Image 1 (tube, helix red, strand yellow):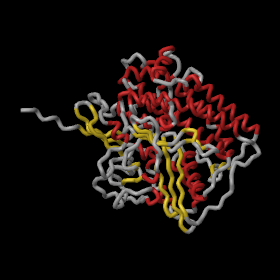
Image 2 (tube, helix red, strand yellow):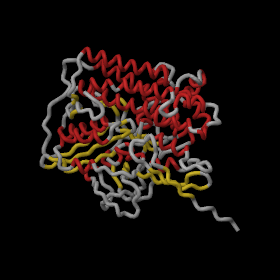
Image 3 (cartoon, rainbow, N blue to C red):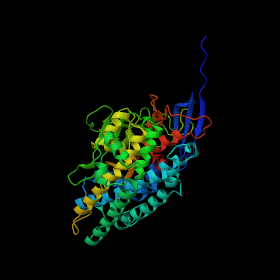
Length: 492
């Protein structure tokens, strides 16, 4: 007679520290591993309801205040929705200035994620017996780590660019549907370039201990490890790679195998500096994204559910806290009914970055490949910023005037640091009749849908090891932080 398996143990992890907003994860654990996970965004904010009835242009005042760390991203998406509504395209100078502002924020997010949010977990006592622990603690201990403090100083100086480009940060107000209202003159362009090169020097000295061009030339995992082995103690990325090898982080946190990017940094010719598309595991090229196939499912959300999942243009955001099957405020966005993952890993896959394609081809989505993709994007985008500054033509237009129609709709797509961000608005009688937002964390941290499909993080957590006696499993923390949640954007 076979012995019955023990029932799973339920563990509630949260609230998480070093996370923007509130997050809880409920885990069913059996035989030392996660069997299933439910991800809860427990806070409701209601920005989509606040916007209803407002003048369309007022959205540029409200939406940056959704989040204090990715407010430029929200501004860019809102401005693009308004420019789509009006049917205009900003001039080249306006696109370059907007891209520079967005890149400043996104690169600061990548830096903060690595040094402040992600790496401090490896200084925990659970790792005290590992050969790299003392060095990790010296560099990455929260608040006191040598490299944490150095990165925060570099981040502070980096944000000075936004003072010139947009007047202030967060909640920069110079981004408009017609471009940027803050023109850049020759002297300012020179000062901005010096700041970009100062940030480049920090990355080349501390994070990579190598020129950015050397890092971006690493075209395979084999080349990455050969570069690591040349000087394993030089630079903070190499120390992370040493931890990957010791802890087998390439096996931790597999995602759904579908990666979505809307395209980052719109160019004057209509292309994106980082491409847009859908990357499927095992494919050779990205597929086109059809945004008409996006639907939001509210089956497991404390929000009213329509008869069927709705496209954002028809989206419904109305609290309904009595739903027995609900466990989060986050809706479940789906693309053609499928779960997708978004983030730097998606942007790099769609853009054809050979190292990330090789890592994902070998290991799939993982803690390892997500973090490498974000760090690598620093090396990819900073040289682009130097090019955008050089392309600005002082004296030419930065912003086109426009008149918004009293009736219509608009879609604004962009890429925040954490991935695909979309704004959709409908205007009637000169007022916002509906405004819906799908943030990157909405995709990655979504709950189950009507078909029972878990979201990307819920899938990635299955199989995560749980050590005996752990109440906040360190492997779960690594997986969650590899997605870098921004919960306040998710529950806007």
